[in-house]
Image (cartoon, rainbow, N blue to C red):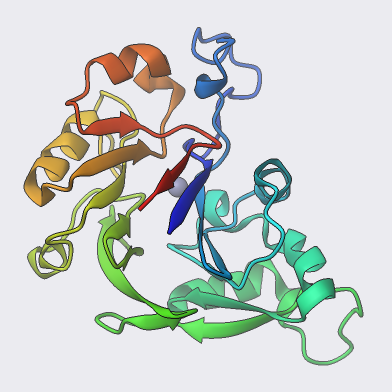
Length: 254
Ligand SMILES: [Zn+2]
């Protein structure tokens, strides 16, 4: 299975519009981060986790030809705002399966009312097939099971996903004990690390490293990164040897 990092930035992306921060002005391509998302593919199967405002650009950059579905972690705009751009996939293959918890589906219906319209639908509107994600209910994607992992983004329940030896968790601030147990034995963990300073709803760097220490994966990749974390090259030097900063267009093999 390959995991392609489509975006590794926090909600504003890097560079931040109008910012003169040194990280925003950096020439290193690893310091340029689109909104957070991954593309997971194996055999003939292809899925994306989240669909933020940079989705079109990310599909073009990754040369992704086809997707079989989108898994949503939560409804925030940096994870959902690109949903209109699934139309090229609809035109080729028809309605696209999406996987999301009920609250997220309700939010998508408000944000993208025209996608869910049943009467007088605009002929070119995006179309989706809704699959509801529930606590403790693994679901099938292609020929693999995806296990939802419930985490807390402040007081908002967000789902991460474990697919065999790989787990992807973003926008985590706290995680309950039974959910931690579901991550035991995972070989590759992706986890969010915003910056060094603490934040109310996201892990900072130390919290992410402590969490990695608890889970003990073979390798861990940090994502959902703010420009305030610092230059990619400098932050990576400070990390334990099995922990890496993800960057846009990095592809790893699980
Ligand atoms: Zn986010």
